[in-house]
Length: 110
Length: 116
Image (cartoon, rainbow over all chains, first blue to last red; front, side):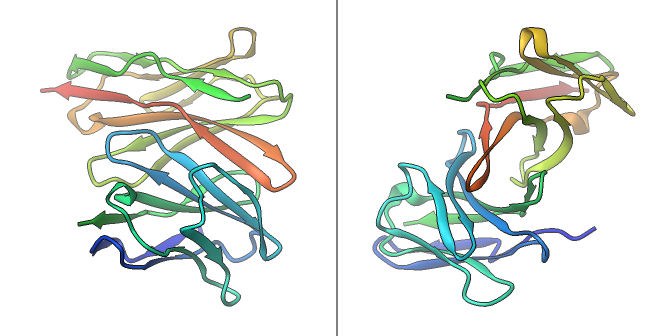
């Protein structure tokens, strides 16, 4: 059964640096999502993406975040200038009617 | 607005005990999906079950069972004869559709400790 994949599994970065988190959604899905989980907290919706544009975003998804689908397979989340509070697990998801979450990228901002 | 409440923050049981994790949800949508996920210490979200709002049939999968009751907006999860490997954080989640797809709202999670 096809699965969502994410790279890297772990990333450590310095505050103020840019990071790009990558996801390969399930190939025939049309909707793509990013979620975030700060350590010890619940998983929170960040953004959804459909037809090459953002369809909805949460208040967490401010100007430092951006998403794009640079080619037919990858879906990326860019954080332009990372802050300490961006340290979290980031999950990508794609779905038709059921969420398939990727394994997550654990981001640590120092 | 949608909301998922998992009132139990932590539960501790001894191996072989049965344990029920509670989940109460709120939504005005008539079409929605409910999920349970297991999150082990490694951090990934392990999908356990999905139910749609039109299917109230309870489900059993091995030692796991789920009780969906629309009348009380609850979707409880029972582990029978718990094992140490069941120790994890369990999330209940509600997924509702909108023009942009589906949005999944998670509960705060219940941390289950199963002691040998």
